[in-house]
Image (cartoon, rainbow, N blue to C red; front, side, top):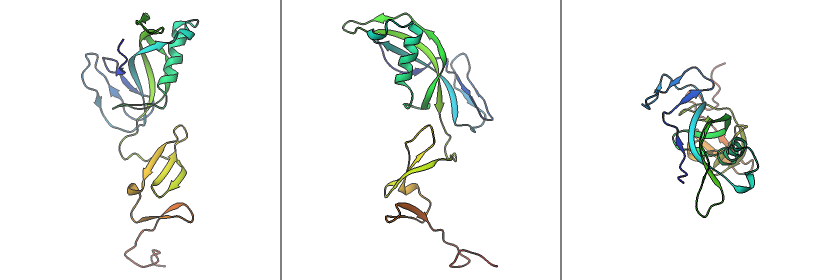
Length: 182
């Protein structure tokens, strides 16, 4: 059975928080976006979920939920974002199909995911977890692996190997101290 992840046609994306709405048309046309001001979206995904034989004792819906929870969190879906978690019950779960040479049951499923999708140049609040000559690693709380490379640091920034920190020293035109009058 095919195991390609795709957005479920017609595409549906709704906003969990923020000041705008994305509208998806039932005929599958492109999404119309009014403004981009939120970083979390709820997206509907269709995928073939494989249930291994050791989970056959569970109700099908529970087994599908378990496998979605194993497969999707912390995974980036191209042009959608970073999956945070499954949202609610699966919307549709098809009958299981057994493939030759594979003991698992393959179910076509449609389900919703909470996705982290910040817009370009969005300012986020995070905690520096590591600082090296290559750049800075930042934790956002739910996601630990945000990496800011050295070439994205404010100019002029330098890495201080003694403290292990990046230092930004802005240059002021009015004086050498940078203090101003007073």
